[in-house]
Length: 165
Image 1 (cartoon, one colour):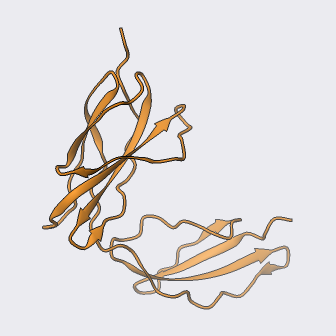
Image 2 (tube, one colour):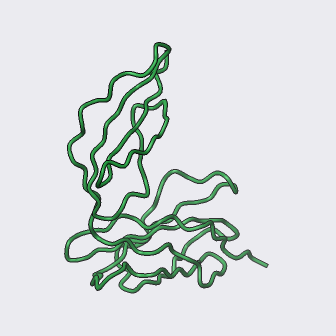
Image 3 (cartoon, one colour):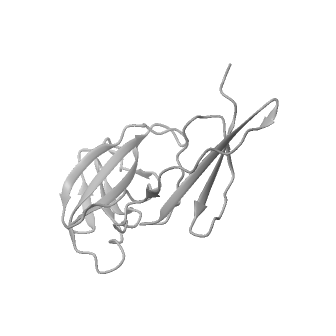
């Protein structure tokens, strides 16, 4: 039989609970603050009711390096899309950006596999080439700083390359 649903509960600064119901034994919690520090507790529920909360997890701290903004298309053509994105906030000096793409198979289905296009974009814009004509792609970027890599940006909406006439 499948495992019982889990009730995820976490603390944010002054014990702020959020409740997420999942039947998985793992869960990705997103929208956490950059450089935030968190403790997690978990409990499960089955046909007999709710169990006790687990002991607190070890403290989890998110990556403190600011994240670049979401990539947006500035121009496109047959087999290429030019992207631009806001640099990370603050006075962060960026050495380079990593740009990744994934193919959109249909409007609601994307490839799960991200492919790195470059790790050497030095400005907050990049021309992605060698794309399929009339195909949709999503993009994300992250910044390399003196302190290391940031987390990836939010995923862009799907952008379509031009078609041959």
